[in-house]
Image (cartoon, rainbow, N blue to C red; front, side, top):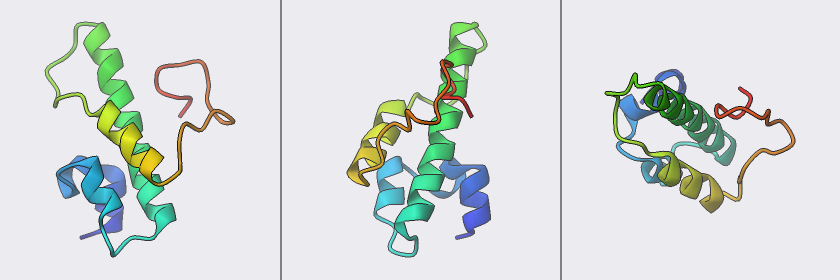
Length: 88
């Protein structure tokens, strides 16, 4: 597994957000970073869906947020902007 590939496209490396949290080869910081990237992608898909440009993979935002919560890394409200993409 390539950490670089997981950061670019988490869904190409992991079958689910829970599989990121269960990966023993990653430290907590890496897991959070991968999940944050996945969260951003999921939010982008939600925006596209609202603009009738759907057709992407199924929405996994709830699973991603649950995985982040399992790592005690809930919403990053300190750095969030008032956008659906979370300010990234």
